[in-house]
Length: 451
Image 1 (spheres, helix red, strand yellow):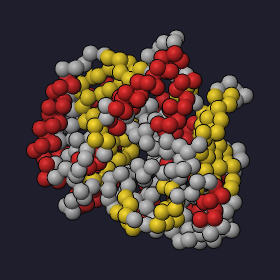
Image 2: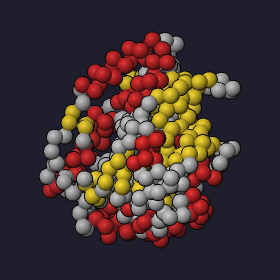
Image 3: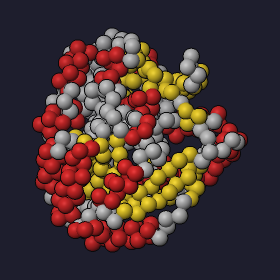
């Protein structure tokens, strides 16, 4: 079968194994440590590039059972579930109990295992960190066939390498995740318009205490209007009857699903060009500029706006697209992002989806992406002329002390990776100990020199 990531580039012919239990994983792969060459776990396939592509894919789609909800000695609630459980299913399980996940990425189809492997972040990283900052423990199946239950105190090296480790340390079987109380299903959203990148960053700094913060950027605007943006701020609506509203919210979620639109075919690639994107960006900016009044929206619409458009990746044509997501330190963020936007605008290869978020402090995980500062994500349709542009962007990012997100990457060079992920050698040494034959590997890991 042919597989790809969400960006649909690159593609690979792979053997797919779909076990329904941990025992079947071991049996399917030979047992007793006799693994086949080049194996990687695959959840929902929502990483964008080639991090979940290998000659043999171990699907976790049937490892999706809910295990328990318990109260810790510190008084908070902990969910334990299998790694193949989607974040959508987690929310459907915990929302009726007045609980919520502390961090959500932009796609609810992402599995718990995938969220850990990529150490995903959301619109609140500047306050709450990334997904793995709320993982209490997890079980990992190593290449030897041994199952290790690790946390920050027991097997901490394995824990910090697996969090953000893109599945290269082993197969995540299940995890315990700290939950937070949910005051309401609704989000109070404010919309602020910024005339430039500098204005947007100043607004983000000014509203640093806002729980959720994300900006859409017109990446093709130039001159004084470079980086003109629409900043969305959000807070959970404070309501005492959250539990009753959450029960009815499950019915509301079903209604949302029924209202989803589906892209039934690949859009003609020629429709995405500089002129159509400039027209769309200008119209969107003008529309949002006239809609600045605060409003109350459903959490699903706030966190997952693109999920209502099923198969939206088809909009980029049959050849797919690449997402380029960078993180850059606070002190050089404006200079770096301004240079990136200038380069993109000059090349005329902008994207509809250009997103700016603020990051808080980095954590202790060896390959986690966030660093304190800003992150910018840009989508580009696949075409041969794109790659020289991305090489130029790499040079700008490295010059300013930044890095690229492994979960979105499909073409980063080994040199770029090693210069930007300073703990890669520590990760590689631990991986060699855990998996001396390099059986857990992907197209990405081999490209980056991680086996």
